[in-house]
Structures are given as structure tokens and as C-alpha cells.
Length: 168
Image 1 (cartoon, rainbow, N blue to C red):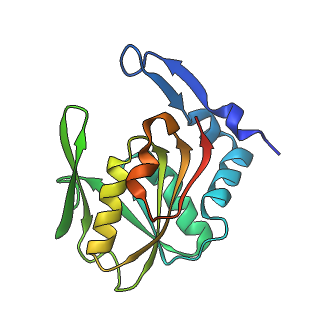
Image 2: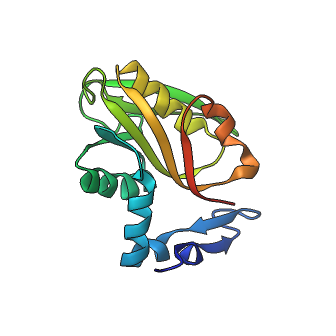
């Protein structure tokens, strides 16, 4: 078994000075590690659809959906989806951002697993939960490869089953 946590490398001062970026590309390149992460993100959960949050969330959510026999639903930045959408905005450190999902992405009562690479401040994940619920589906859990616990993003997802494979 590969110690996949050792495959997350630190890149200092990226994308700007003072930021310690957690690079998951070595993990993704290692078949055994990547397989273990995909399995662990969905372990013990039952769901109909997997939401992947743009962009790195797509890399993890699509194979989780495939492996689990579930559908995959992308949540994208505003203006990137071609059909009718639902939108949710959230605050950033300086300003705000908006994400969207197709309005017809879920059937009423679908059980949904939200997957992303990192849980940081929780704003994006909270907006994704809002979109899934507004579309008439039920969020069963939110699974993340990594949680930056010092940013307390989990607090914004209270009442939800929040899972992180590793916390830093």
C-alpha cells in the first residue's frame, strides 16, 4: 500500500508569496495512491450522483462516480454551463464568486455526494450544498481529499456529514 499522503508535495510561495500550495499531481500520477483516494472518498456512502466542483474536484469526483455506478454532475464557475442553470454566490477574501449547476442535473430526491480536492474556508462547498438542495436533491455527505483545518471551513457545513481524508 502506497503512503499516498507522502505524495502531496508542498510548493512554497505559490501562487503568491506567503502561500504554501499543496500539490496533488504526484498523488494523481501514482495509480495505487489515486485508486485508494477514489475508494476512500466514497467509502460507506450510498448516493445516486456525485458533484464535482470546478476544477480539481472534477479529477476526483468523476472516477468516484464511475467506480460507484453513480452519475457525475459538474458545478462550474458562472457562465461555463450551456443550459439553464441555478447559481449561488459566496464571499472571497476580496470580492465574491458565483458557481452554477444545470437546473435539470438532479432528479427529485437524488442522494448526492459532493467531492472536491480541498476544504478551505468552506464558501465554495457551502454554495454547492445550496445548489444541490435548491435543485431538489439531498446531500448525503461532502468528501474532500484535504482539509485546511486552520481555516475552519467545516464550520460552514454544520449539520452535514463532512469527510476529509487528511487534515493539515
